[in-house]
Image (tube, helix red, strand yellow):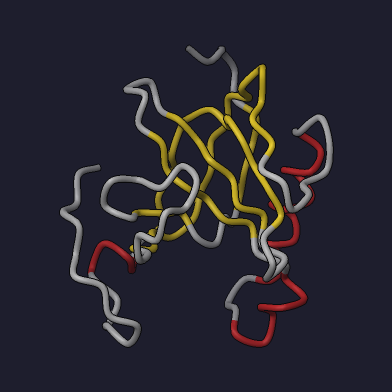
Length: 137
């Protein structure tokens, strides 16, 4: 999907593209645990472009979330896919993992995040993740 980089404002209303849920086929190439307890995961498509997908800690987001159960299931599934649990250090995978992630689009402020898309697009929160058939690269 090609969405131009929007001007970022903390209180900007959600754009139409951010009101939809998307499914993205890509490969997990790295991840880490952020200070807010989210799993920050970098995925890469066949084009070589990367984007961030975030798995929030439902305990932190449940009061404001419409889907804490889906967020918890997605997070647990992700933990079962990766060779070790996320830590505060970014872990680059030697063997990327082919996945499909599902969740709403979020156009984040670009602030030197590892793996950020050119337009700041993220899937956040991830509501579903599954390993898909096939390989990466």
